[in-house]
Length: 298
Image (cartoon, rainbow, N blue to C red):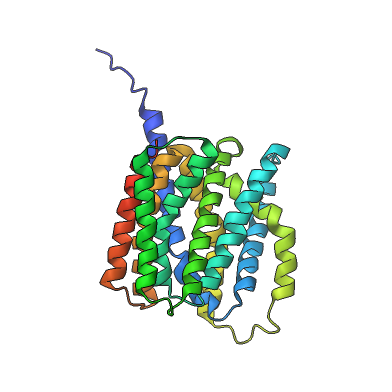
């Protein structure tokens, strides 16, 4: 007897590939804050932000030319600009500024809100109508993060906490806009074109903000700059947006919930920063709230 062909295999394989690509993207992003923490100790935050975007943009331009990718349409330019403002300039600059005041382990707690911010902007931009329970989890998660910051003492670093909250907001907008745009422009093409559109400004700012001398910069700082330029700014997004396109934004986007765990592990293992039980507990609680919000997003 002939076996009936499995018509679902290609779809299942595509979904599995999406989860794998998304997982790799989250792993890469998890090293961003610890690497930024190392780099910002020796580089000015503005220079670090524009330099990483310049290096990634030059590489993205070469890749786009190599594969002879079609140019974005006029209708796609505004969404690309939003992506650039959110993930090319806004999030890197705000986190670099924040990490002058707080440790990477402290800042990673705020990443528990990133999936929620992405979901909220996705709801707004996509016109969805989530259930009331969604907003309950959203508010509860936000209160947990604010409560954690207040519990540390407002004299500790209100500037760092505020900068991290702003960073999460602009990044969530950039993720949501990029995910929508990836459906028509392509996964890795979104971040590549966003970087290229930003390139003239980033080059000019790099030249303007460059230090007078690089002689005192240590090897770890250079490695950190290389990581956030090559991996955090470009390669991570290649896997991330491809995963979103293959496996679905709502499904694969939940992998962001793992990022705080990976980030805390890196902060503790590589930077030897203290990760308290309270910090870990708040991270877990926020992740549970975000998971609940995602559960009732539709």
